[in-house]
Length: 118
Length: 118
Image (cartoon, rainbow over all chains, first blue to last red):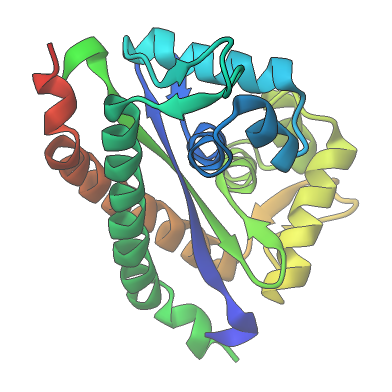
């Protein structure tokens, strides 16, 4: 397409408020990778307090626990995804892939006129 | 769906940078309604300079003129959509409706597990 014009989507979940989107999804992926919310926040150059608040908001409005946190012991302070968080993240990622592929296809048809402009 | 969970999408167009999205689309709709970029900006509680910059960025990266501006005369300072802007806005709005309807349908299937959680 002319000028490499293409479509980009942001997919968010709402209840009566915004509760889940690309930011919290990335946080959960990073928790899964690093085993800690603090490390996840740092990897996104985000304050720990902000990361905590984003996860808490999502947990409250989804009424789901997303993180299992361990205190003390060898792995003190660690966090891991609950089974529900893993299921949610999988569903969100699959929905994003699905809708983005559809949008890219429909975009090409809807904007054919743009490509044809002089 | 439990907790009225639903999906929301933001559709944007990119070249090598973000160039068109809900904000500039709403500005164009308001210009069409009010006949002036200044009135359009005011209706969105946006500074005129910001509105002008948003339209200019979209024009530059799409390589399209979006606004016809009249200076002087009885309707001095007025603005109207170019035929290309109208075509672009129609295509964008249609793409948004199409992709949002698809996303809502796919969301229901992808998040059936959430509805079924205890």
